[in-house]
Image 1 (cartoon, rainbow, N blue to C red):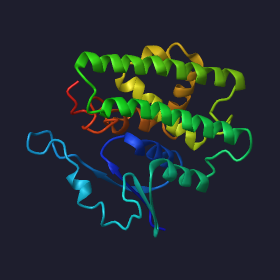
Image 2: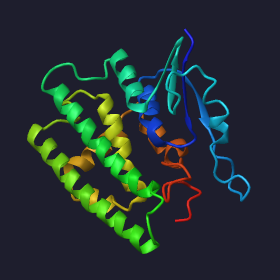
Image 3: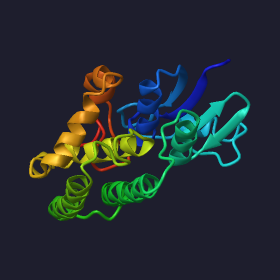
Image 4: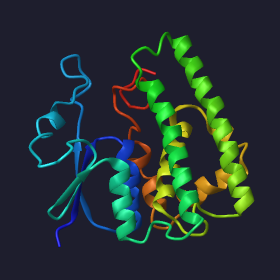
Length: 236
């Protein structure tokens, strides 16, 4: 059987939970990473590499990331992650674990989207105004982490669906880690022992420990150069 194929930008971004899930499952996959030109006045940044292929791949809803699984093709990051999770037993199947995991999935996506909205906004203001928006993000993150801390405390679970690792944990780890990486939120995480233990537990998974510590993951940009921060080209 031919290996899976995924396509995405040459960043962690929305595809990193997919990559980590496949690595955790030891599933072979091929990947096309689309660049943004290079750091020069002539070509920085652009989407030309992806746009040259976007409408030639037979995708019903052309977008990144995409997944090719044999003759089957699809897009949308969470939909791809769920397909892979269902096929490999990485999804909760009983109540209340299923409802809990889907609830936290939605919460984590909200946390991610709040961050993405601020750092991609064209009207993010002066450096001082932008820093204030980041401070507001950190304040809202602290509230969300407090709720997640209470959830883990109440249920005594290792993962969001109890003792079973699911695709939601891959989403939660990646998007919470963005805040630690470039929104200066590490001190906030240190206030919440259960959440900190959760992040460390994920990082210590034997299937992922080496990858998470590698330059392939750690040195990769979380977001594209169109973001105000979070990419190696950003003038932070």
